[in-house]
Image 1 (tube, rainbow, N blue to C red):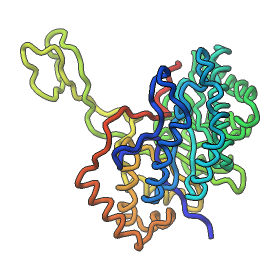
Image 2: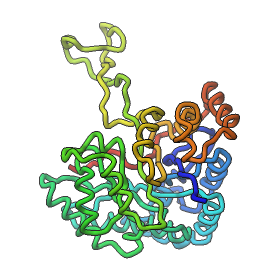
Image 3: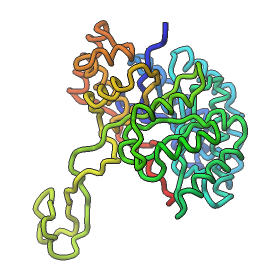
Image 4: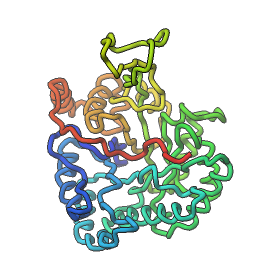
Length: 373
């Protein structure tokens, strides 16, 4: 019997207070990968308890492991071999698919050879962690093409040069995602045809950047086909934000004509809150179940796991699953969600309605807007 499709979320756990996902101490406190893995162990338990079977690890679980000026941390991954093996064994036993999304500062197409070299070092460290966990080829590292640097074609070709410099264990794990403002699905398909690198289809990015006007279904088929037989592809899905954006601005003169303010500005105020339309590249907190069901029906016959990138992380999944069972049971069934799960899913909904006491901390996520232009 084919395993049901997975739904996953990235990095931060919001559905249970007290679950840290990495050692965030500063270097003076000697943070360590072993501490991150110890923190992540109960995260695996939480995932299993709620049947959340795909999870993106923070790219910072090995703090300072590749910092060029801190050699005392450089052996961290090798020194954690036993802990990595144990963590990987637990993830496999719980059937939880793991991945990394290296930060926006990891760039294989930088015109600066030193930055490319450092980026390959970062990738090698993360690939080594996945190898030491003894995870199969479904455990990947997701990256973007990078910056444009005033010459898109040259930057796209330079990514191939960076990829070819990567050691074998990095190329085995690395997968390439279409982005929302620089390199489209057509661009990453061009790179795949010349390198064989596997591709990650990002649904929202495809809507935001598709100047070639590629058809979604046929493009998705090509992305899925970039993965070898026996290794299940995965994709990214998110809904765009639709609410007004609240932007703080200094008061420098008379109000602008037509400016929409959240509240009247006091005569002595220095800051005002301006309400602006949404930016469609922004991820919503939760996933629109009707949009997702429509997409999955369009993708009928294709098998892939789905990393849901809603800003509410695991909470978005706890809400999406009962929505699918209620509004699109055919789609829910593809993810192994059936009527026998209704009571538990209803309990998840009730808990969400009552409010979840998650920790207030910075959202450490990957795949943010690239810093390089």
